[in-house]
Image (cartoon, rainbow, N blue to C red; front, side, top):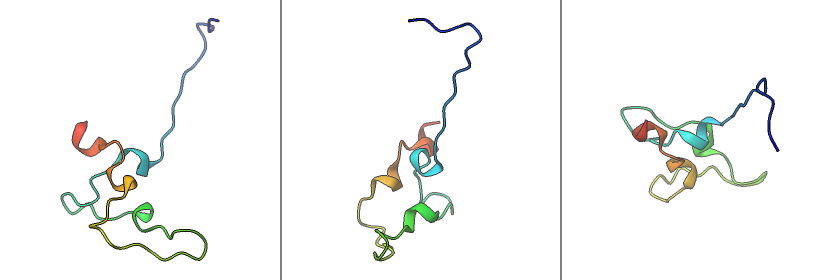
Length: 63
């Protein structure tokens, strides 16, 4: 299968999927860092607990 030379490739990301570094240089938390767990869940402010959303792909440090 081949694509037309006029085919335009594109990508999309959500900030919490790429940023990471929630605790660097006064960056602070974003909404995704404290998002409630489910409709009746609590807001997780325990920053010592590992959360994959806080690491993401670590774009902040790598690029």
